[in-house]
Length: 299
Image (cartoon, rainbow, N blue to C red):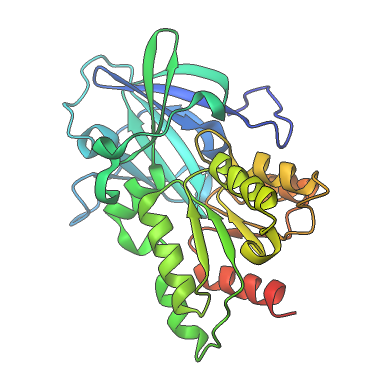
């Protein structure tokens, strides 16, 4: 799928693909979308998860198809406009069966509100943000969580930490920006298990940026932040914008920034490098994240 819109890195903008399931409207970051196809019934797989409709095989690669309506507990469509959104993130190619595709809008992360605890309490929600477009409320879905709910082994590989062997304790302060409460908890627990015990969590780039400025004003920056770890997709301010602000600032540019995101592919890696990121890792690979931190903080 080509959108014909090239987004400059670090502008805090994204493209949202709006689609419909039932009578509700949802969105996905276009950076996760490979292509959009008319829906055709896939080949069923025996004993698969109830939300998996089957597989299809375009261009000699097998793609799993997830019935998004079933996962969202909504009735099947009867409009005959069903589409398949083929995505790529976390090094996975997954097709999502939706009822129609509305279009693409260019927006700022600052326009996207973070769902409150009533929607995402206890890490069970699957909404990462909400935005109003053309008078409609669009719910940005957490597709990583949808997939990990269906297939837990595709989620954060916390077992990788056990394979690192004995670890020394390191109290260097790490500031993390991660909007998913569940992933934030897993990342924090994994780093503590790996010996990094001085961690401050924030839920988006704006909160992390505010923390940095707060520490600078207090005169405690050097004592409170030795490394920043950031996701890319976050409401209010994304990780690329946060990275750009840090690296363009004389007060903060010395602080290493590690991007840890499901969106780290070749294109996103080039953008991160252009912004000055010190390391970039794909989100399932928590072991590689720890190795990257080791190189930065133990050198």
